[in-house]
Length: 480
Ligand code: PNW
Image (tube, rainbow, N blue to C red):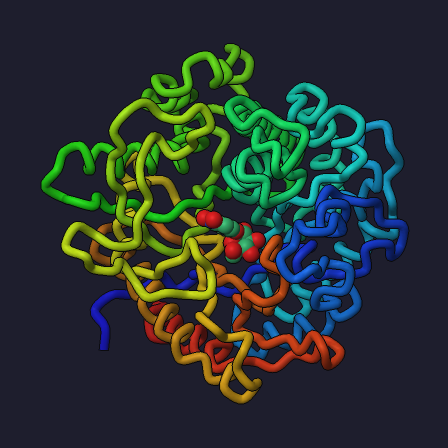
């Protein structure tokens, strides 16, 4: 038996994102998103695939709800496709009732099944119309106005049916992967071998700033016009892994690890909680980091009702000598998977960036809770891929012991953080309900607790972990 627990009304379940699972890119009048465009450019997705069919979830809502029910989950986190709701995206563009009503019905069906919906307004699939029109996130004023309009349309349509709102999923990824590394849409970078447009030393910081302002704008709309009657809470979900110093006895490595956390979480959370960027970022980036106007500070500061986090693995961080590169985005550090003694931080997975380490998860929750004054946390994504999973026969894939080990460790660390460290944690949605389109990695990298047979008509087969997660929560969640 364990001496740690989680509260009685804990929200737990699984998460997905629309572009990764839905398919049906043209159904019921949907417009194109930057991911519809990007995934069709040859060479952008490793296995040459795209999200055109994915898990076919747009046509299988009943099946997905049954699947969720069978896991015992009480919560489902999913994202809305802005381009289904407003095909061209803008505030003067028409609303597509069919697209909107698809999601309203889905939410009604989730409620009927006893599952709480947790809704993300934008999980990376920006309407391409807005990117074409004015550069999307690159134009903060236009973008905030269009996001404000979209958010209002959605809040109005769902009313009190949704009590948990997330504005943006992982602005770090939208900025860095989309405008520096260029592995994600819209694929801009200074690296001319990858793209003929972009400036990685400036654009990611402009994009991040604009996402913060649009987030603050949507939160203001919710609080001014809906919160009182609909009674929900709203926040942004940030991502990042914990950072352990490569040599815990070297103050330079200790500083470097802290700086890396500031460049991932602090970039967004410092403005949201304190109305300013971290000092380390201002120092390194100088005037390339935008400044907040007083009006912007008023919008952004205090704009989280809870702290949403997505986290997967852990890293060792070593300081770097010399000046940071103009396009550096981690605070001039080396990110390593082995420490000074040559010890791996965690086992290998199918994702090059992901080394699981449950202890690091607990440390991360402590770091964040301390820095931001003990906010309420919802862990909106956490999960793992498995080295070589896709190459195994189906029967073996279904017996995903490694994923069960992962959830056992991470949910245990979560319960320890709640019980022993006094951190206020109210929810956890594992990534992911289904194997799905893993962005530029295509379908090879599987994160699901459910196997999806892409060759066999998208048939779903629950893996062992689909039942294990519920058993783990049953162990920790208080019954009285
Ligand atoms: C998250 N990294 O992405 C996303 O929210 C999901 O859509 C995605 O499928 C999931 O994690 C698994 O990858 C990330 O490089 C992608 O550190 C890359 C990183 C982090 C998060």
